[in-house]
Image (cartoon, rainbow over all chains, first blue to last red; front, side, top):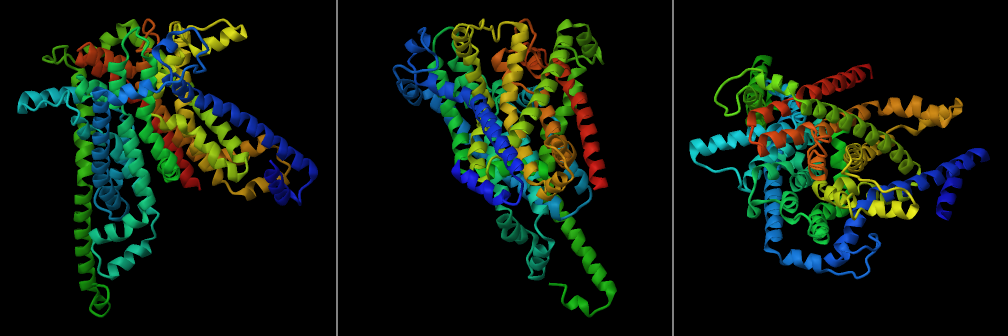
Length: 302
Length: 307
């Protein structure tokens, strides 16, 4: 607080005393409401953590639900030893990593072409990429389901109930937004840079790999994080397209296999959710600035 | 490489070279964008159009029935419940997300710059946790016999609430969870926008004797107009098409009172096996989203032209 006051006095030295009081009061209220909202925003994850440390006997007991009397790691242990949960985790990890790579291979060259190399219909296509965002996955899963059935009938390739089919569909969720972000980043690179590269005899491919990708690297990292978190979190497609437990991804897997009616497995379910949320949370903890850049870039550049 | 010798010869050959370059450039560009075009056409545009076709077939998908599925939906009471609930859900959730995001962004902005990172870091956590997993946490918080909220309510002498059992409370609960999940997104967007408002504008307003409310109304809001439009557009689309939260919390119940288009389409189309009717249900999301997008995009481009 003393640092705050010092800063205030430095900045506000020239202003009148009543104004300084106003600002200090505003600061106090800001802290008050921030604490209130932090409590609101963090209650569910903290409660999930509390529950995850309880044994099923304690979950079912009539005690203070907000406190753990006998903390235990047995839920986490059971999950890590459970082949089923490990399969979900493994499926999710493979799908997310492959989707990130596919997304980047599609959206970076496309964004470069749309931002820098105009061609017939490129402006329309850039608009179309944005509009693709308006078609939600909830509108596409039924026709996709039917298309998969048709593929099975015609080519005898079973697409439903295979986790790898999600590698084919997830790019529809990630590519439009990543391309949109990358168009913004590429467009903000000064034209003089590519002119200099052209004069030095660089081709378009070299221009992309030697100049655009290194300069726009923060944007690429942001897009990568976005693609990873989206494919890690998606729930509808795995729920609609996978049915057997060995083909499921984390969110759908937890939802369909761990919830077993009236059994007090809630400690384990909460542990499964927290472990499942760990990869995006870790990425967020270490790469917060890129994460936020990815969120905001898409819209501020629009 | 052509630029240096081209300075000496006639202008005609330079123009020819440039044209060739442009032609090559556009071909290369088209090839680079081709995977994107194929993906969008094959897995977004084609399925979207195909779902219109599906919605006009009969249940066994053999006969073309025109708008029979739609007119059948209009006679179903559940359909009108879904329309009503989808609108209540999307509009109230977006309004509260935007309001909370706007207010909390101001609180974070007021705090000294050093501490802002820490607050922002904590406040964005709901957005980072995959919604299917955090919603399971909420589901457990709302549990009929073990609700941790009700435990507090009982201690405070407030009657306990049947969060997901009573239709009205269930509607409130799904909106609450959606606001909890989505408000941090607005917060981050508005915070970024607040930082881009020049400080001089506030100083000028202060010299003119503006109070805090007038500063928000005449300086902050006009400066943030674009970002507010875009975030509301994005959020309206995502919220209207929401599936995870409603599916996990209530699965549409009690007595279909919390179904939104996505969950009902899933129930009818995938679980019920009536692909054509499910496609018809999900198609109702599209016009509403298109209208919202049209208005907000028009608004943005008009603002852009004035500036």
